[in-house]
Image 1 (cartoon, rainbow, N blue to C red):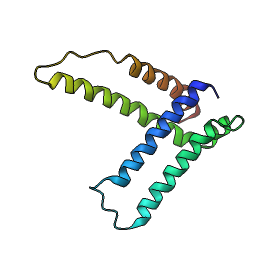
Image 2 (image 1 turned 90 degrees about the vertical axis):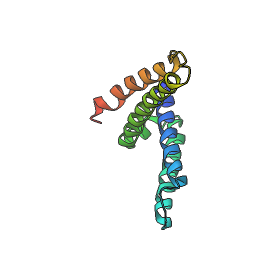
Image 3 (image 1 turned 120 degrees about the vertical axis):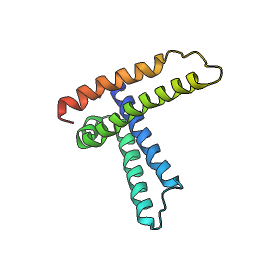
Image 4 (image 1 turned 135 degrees about the vertical axis):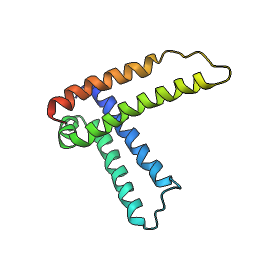
Length: 128
């Protein structure tokens, strides 16, 4: 598996793990039963195992094949959230008093473009 593909999938998975961890800490969700917390933690552990497996010299491709659906969903969420964060930052700059000039998101735009290319080759072309 190419290094850029590994990097993007690891970032997408890390992002997904952070989303799940924030759910555990969400005060609006009343986890009166620990089984929800346990399921969330089990998924975080699974994701972290996949992240570790992506770097394995021989297993990187098999990790992708075995977990393609999860990887592709995490990648889509990562792409969407990068776009949302970019829009939020632009909005905050425009709504400040006085309004601040926007700037270019060169690194973010490059990350989104790379993630979309990887999504096409690793997900869409494989039916995900």
